[in-house]
Image (cartoon, rainbow, N blue to C red; front, side):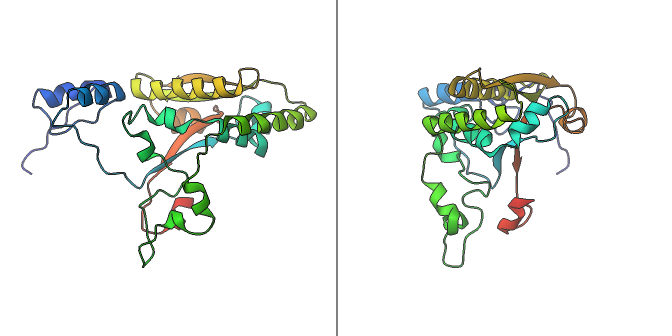
Length: 235
């Protein structure tokens, strides 16, 4: 290329305007824009192929602001209550409101990443297979684990609710929307008597401002493998 022009766009919602004005060749859409363009039967609307990236919820067991959070996050029943009480489809609708289930992973190794010589997807092998076709959102099971966690943690002197700090970058509207959805899902399904999500904002870097200080309870993070071997997903 002789020249490359880079546009600074303030948020994801504004990208579509640049596309419609002919300044860029493609534009990722937020959920409301996807719904609108679907209703308009836009000839430009296209769902791109899924990537190898998998995103999950990360529990911090060494946070700097609460020993109760560390004890809770270290408790398997507490983590399972959040695991089964987390509505992945509801959250994913923010990214793909038309077919959200098409981009949901049930394991940290993504579907269509690597296959065996006979074409079998890696997620269909061994113990991974049983998780691929089941609904991991089971609210009643989440409540069962909730009670187990309460019984065990109260014996350790933990008081409820467990306050989990969740951080997003200041000014990032899409990330803020996802954070609010995570808060709504967990507090509604598990109860504010059990867990609360405190939404916080950093200004420049999550790594330097939050992770390095340990000032968070949970975080969402993803991984794109560097090479074609499932072991890389454990990195």
